[in-house]
Structure formats: C-alpha cells, structure tokens
Length: 392
Image 1 (tube, rainbow, N blue to C red):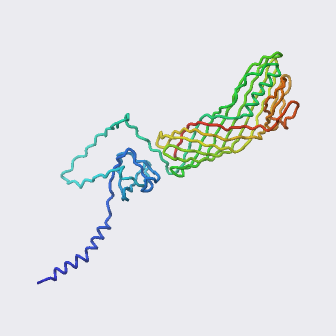
Image 2: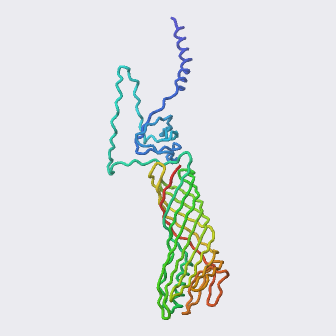
Image 3: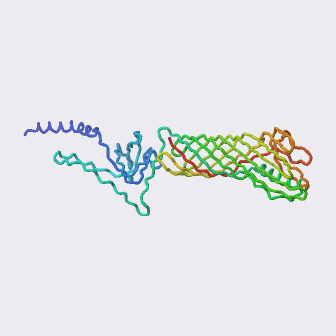
C-alpha cells in the first residue's frame, strides 16, 4: 500500500494553509458604500452620540466607509470648497448600497439620464425646506453686527431734571408742574469678533454704542410771571467688551461679558419769559467697568450666515464724572465753569427742597443748598437686540 503521496499532500496542506489564510486576511478591503437616509445625518468627531458634530450631511448623499466600529461607520466627506473631513456616522442614519458586478461588453447600453427626483411632501408639512449648512471654515472666526433698544436708570439725572422744573415754578409763584419726561430708553448698536473654540463655546471682543436723550418743553404760568421751561437730559456709553458664548443646545446660547465703559452725561436747563432767558448746559465724562449677561437664539439663513435675537441685562453705574458747565443769560456774557458733576438739593421760594444736577468747580455750598455729593450716572437696565453673525 502506497501512502507516501498522501503524506506529502497532508504536509503541504498544513504548511501552506496558514500562509494562504494570512494572505487573505492581509488583503486590502474595499470601502463599503453607504447612503444617507435621514433628512440630516450628523457626522461626529468620535463614535459616540455625545461627541461633537463636525458636519451635517444631507439626505441622499452616497459615502464610502473605510471601516466600522460597532454601530458606527467612519467616512470621509468632501466639502464644497474641495476640502475633505472625516468622522463617524451612526448606522441608523444610513443604508448600505449594493454594488453591481462588471457588465459584459455585449450587454452595454447607452447611458440614459435619470429623471429628476420628485420632492414628496411629508405628512404635517407644506412642501419641504432644505436647511442651509452653517459651519465654520478653515479659520473659526465669526463677525457679528447688531442693533436694538435698551432701558436706563440715570436716577440722579432724572431727579435733577424734575427738580429744575419745580424750582423754576416756585420762583414764578406757580404750582409744581407736571414732571418733565424722564430719560428711560436708549438705542444701541454693536459689533463683535469671536473665535469659535468648539461647537459649544466661543470667545470674543466687541464694542457697543448706547445713547439716549429726552427733551421736553412746558409752559408754567404763575401769579408773578409766566415762562417756558426746557429740559434735556442725555447719556452716552461706549463699552469695549470681552465676551463668552456658551451653547447648551442647538441654536440656543448664553452670553456673558465684561466691558470698559466710556461714559458721557449731559443736561440742558433753559427758562424763557418776559423777553429774557437763562440757560445752563453741561456735560461730564468718566470711565469704569460694567458687566452684562444675555440669553439668545440664532437661525441659519445662508450657508455661513445666521440671524440672532437676544435679551439681556446690563449692570453699569459710574460716579466722579468731570466736565464743564456753561451758563448763559439775557444781556450777559456766558460763563464757563469746569469741575465735577454734583447732585444736591436747593430750597425754593416755597421753602421746598428741589433736586438739581450741575457741574461745579467745588462742592455746592451756597445758601439754601444741602445734601451735596458727586452725581452717579446709572446705565444699568435691560436690552433687546437683533443682528447677523457671519462665519469665515
């Protein structure tokens, strides 16, 4: 019985089998083609549902998956500008695309243009609106401009305005008039340049212009004389700010900021009657720190542009303002006095004390003046603004 050939075959099988198996394992695997089936598929940095989103891929996009880790495919996506980004996409958002084998030469047919795909309205929707892509480019910088309205609380300035009208009425022998309009609203405009540190966090620098004034004119008729009283308090604040924005959810953010304010307060007090007039006009400036916080939302309106609206709170109060006061009277030359903005009370002809504000070279201490101190200009209040944010 001849067993030598059989033994030789068995030896060859045991010796060559592992080599053949290793070659098969080391052979390069072809990428798997997958197709996005969700309306928007999130491409994530890591194979984890809590990982950062690096890109949103629209429905119908065909991708090549280099590998699979559990329920996640690793794919590469080509951007509009030609760049390529890689990331992980969950298997529930895609389906595998079957690849047809090579066609025989005689079975080739002329290529036929596929008919355009009809958009089908889903239940509960009117048509279908494609959500624009909103992402950061190669440089993660964002520029924003905004405008809005804000409330103010310049109590000393408003009290001084009402006090001037009451003191003038007392000097004319008239009853205390209806208080002139106070300063409570201001317009604001601003810009911001920020760096998007991550999808949830951004740091920035910016500046605002906050400005408000309120002029009022009233006629006062008294037992002795009649006259017209004009008042106009005004404020302006220009903060240069450092800010941080945090996104707890998609399209929602919380913003905080600390700013160095340049503040200017002004006033105009004028009385006219019987062919004469008397006017006091002054302004004073100061610098100081202020803070703000806001809550907002943003919506994509173009591939790299978003519309945002936010409501916030501002905390900023200043004292020690310095400037000058110009007093003008009928038939007399104007007089200019430099100094500090003070708040004080002065007794009128009716023995009542009326609040006043004025720039004085020294602490007011003339007859009838009490409770003198440096005036405080409070710009604290609320603000609502809208704007556009562009991503480079």
